[in-house]
Length: 581
Ligand code: NAD
Image (cartoon, rainbow, N blue to C red; front, side):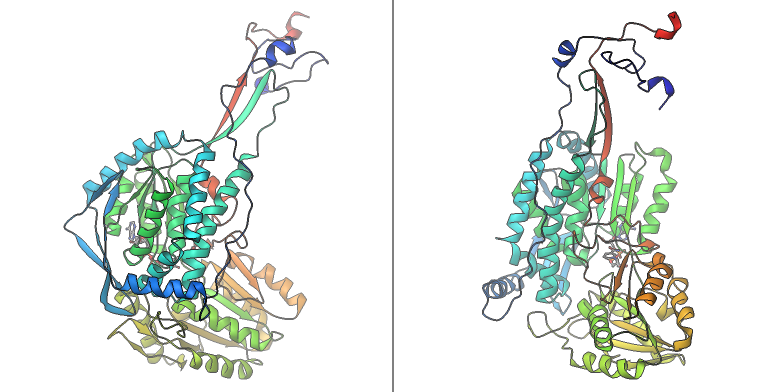
């Protein structure tokens, strides 16, 4: 801001200078009669609360409803089209989604959009954005809240059944994802939006000059590219940019297609107009290559692995001068999440938290504990508890409510995870102390596996496995500082981490020493289980851009704010008073 455009102090009863104008001492009543051209949205206050998680006990209403929906979903193979605007498309590139725990069964057939259909979706989105951005915020908020109510009520078990059967989640893992987290994202982002709208710039004398800040979408389109492992993430990646006035090409993951399609249908039923979100399943690289080549790419909202995000970023870099906007790049990526145990830690808590974090949903949560540092003094107490708990886990079909976990997502994941177990069996530094077996004859089943390593830098302690493999490094108690240092120095990831101790001064030290090693840091709690609005989520370093989905700042990443200064007095004099003194 230049000196000349700043308002300067003037005598009482005299209006201040207004941006390069010489308007002075006009009557207030005259100026006040002028109304601002731009009106701010009037969104009612929205209560912030988390959707309650249902418990699915035998005989409960929700259990009965879910079992019914599971039967229905398992007995059909849904035909899922590409949707662009209000048109459906089916190409000859047909793919099937199978149940990972019973891969002979298809639950959905879908179609890959080719380059020309992706281009069509871009054209439709760019046009739709211009109209959608003019729809008042309060109307958008009504649609989102209607959708959240449909998800919480009528379609809750449809979403859960699709997630359980398509992504092999148990009832509770589906409930916390495709019900609670999804509903929280849809509902809470409207409340955050409302909060963000409260900020307005200073207008020192609004009858002379009014300053406004309004939020626009970004002209162009946003590409939302979602992973398989959380249904809710797909909903958030596509619909938070849409809430903010953007249009979206949503490329769901092949292995989460049914649950993601269910979200798309619900949002449409709630009132999201055609073209605002386009449902575009496609081969990953074909999609990535086409969207990054378009000048209208306004942003990529990505969650998935580091190599995919790095490739997209590189492509955007190569095309950077061709775009209308500098595209926003949000990428929430992988992790090598840790549990660090101090000699003063509570043994039972460590064992229980580590088993849950490492093995719930087969370690396929981006926050799952994959490496643990345990002091020599506690190892004799912790080891048998870990092994006993591991042995007690039932791994099976998700429709059997006594299963703790089920199969991993697909054949590629099975091969990758198996290769780490084989590596452990073949290395003299590593010993498989629990589990280690696998079988993909019916479903992609891998037993929860615990490995002990002598080498804290072995690849099993460094690389993301994204499966039910936990590796433990036992350190000497006297070397606790060196062990703490290993956490941050041995991998590029910094997603989640947990420290377990009773010693308060150690906890304080660890919170500082480990500050950069995790975007979500836990003290005496497991590294998984973040809740929208409670622990906004995202990691630093190579784990992502850390934009904290589920927090108040996230929706602003998808807004292009505009500052407006409106002056109600005429500009008539180029000189300043002191010049004629
Ligand atoms: P992935 O990278 O294989 O796929 C993610 C998405 O990208 C899929 O839709 C895929 O089809 C698509 N894709 C693949 N190649 C592409 C390309 N060249 N251009 C455009 N899109 C492309 O990841 P995944 O296996 O689905 O998910 C698991 C990964 O996601 C893990 O690394 C996990 O840690 C991470 N993850 C991170 C978070 C987080 O919040 N940090 C949350 C969930 C998952």
